[in-house]
Length: 288
Image 1 (cartoon, rainbow, N blue to C red):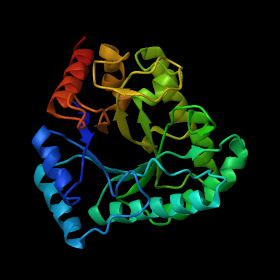
Image 2: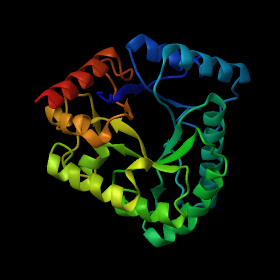
Image 3: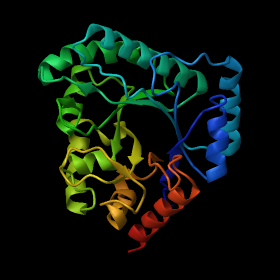
Image 4: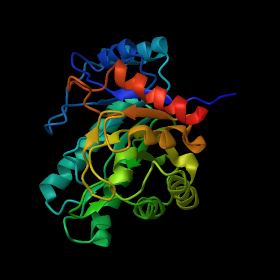
């Protein structure tokens, strides 16, 4: 039996969180990622509880194979500024609460940056922050650390750093990982090279366990290999190009929700054409 990769998209929930499922259906998405509040401000959205029930109903009707909620990009769980730190923790807790209410499979978050204080110092803030959010998880809804990109003390750029956090949190049963193709590439991992990707996944399996890999972000890259420039490109239009098929077709990455976070040709987010291109690249990689 062929195991599919469930290609989907990060989509708007404007008009009510349940409307994101309608948008997913319209573009043929098999999985979905949403923000549970505006990504540009700390203030949480006051959701109508009825929209949570509607979300669950529509997900079942559409048959989405994965739903992710993404935490705010503003969050920094290693922040040295106490106000930013507290806002970050509150925002992640709120995202997890909404994710559980809609029956999402996971909340994805970036750990943040120690801002020059050092990785070990950053962990002193990161670990208690994540620990209290893990208390809100349930058997359905996990918390996923996303591999990060960028300079300036960014935490989570390597499997080793993610594994250290995982270990220090006692390998919590609902703490997992989300891998981003663009972030890997600009952090120096050439995901277009099968041997390099094999090595990375072997490292992840040994340090964390591939059973903890619960989701993928599929993005082409406008940043060069190892540049630390987190710049997504539309599928097939960036430096990964057809080589993205190595990532999409890898046997150890099948059966997962694979969410596009690209701007689309009209800069309104992923659309049906981006999903079509992704599936086509994957199909060619598997066939050839």
